[in-house]
Image (cartoon, rainbow, N blue to C red; front, side, top):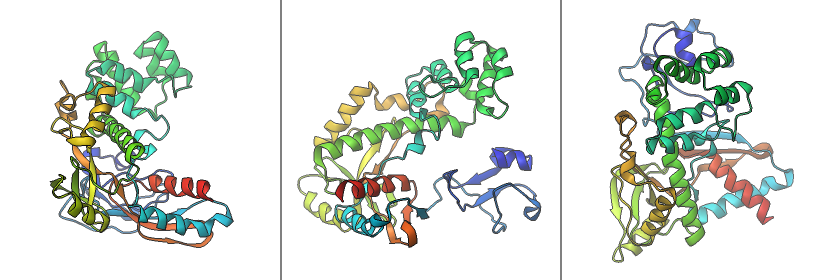
Length: 352
């Protein structure tokens, strides 16, 4: 958004592989489909390290992985224990592949709640929750809107920087309601809400599996396993169903890090697993009162999601500790460093 405004071109003419943590110092490639002069670009807190021409635009999903250097603030006496803890994590097959908290919003961690309302077809409630969520929002202008429900007044009060909220309010002012207001937002933002709800369901199933079985590495009859590469990127086109005849062979391959147990990111093409894994999945879906076919979003076909699968556990690659608790490692695409750090700090604090 910022780069498109700075360059005065459409957001559609800028592409990249994935989002980065805004609080980190990150390096990332961008493709800009426009005649620009990179050497003349000056953006606060950003530096252009290199630029060149390409005959292919980057797209989400093109990323292979990320290399992290993290300054972990721990007690000096705990620094030597970090490597031991990571060894223990790897011995058990890795760390749970949770979606990190930032998946659900950097400040207002409610994107999954908005996504659930979209999946349930409650579009006006979803838009209202985006504009004001009493669980997180303390700003007067948001609370005022919840009381008077007048978009004209709200547009005078909501800060100019809140582009997306103002887009919803502008739609409401023009149409008199918020029923179809998500059409006023970028598709990528609206899809983020649906993806967040899928991620929330995944995290719940993963937590329940850990609680019941403890071990995420060993497959169970009824599981679906995926082949993985060195960075634990899964080949989602090559699913293997686990049964009582092949479970021991697949268990060996999981322990050799060539396969991993997977959990559904539910969508309209998803199917519930069989056996014990399916019972866990069905229990979560029942508690949420959601069915896979509901991810075929009525009235917003572009927000529909057919679903896919995500591995349940993974390992940090080329892990090493530097000076003063600095951690250096690589992870495959879509794997959250925050999930690994959470496991490290939790085990260091609890074990020693």
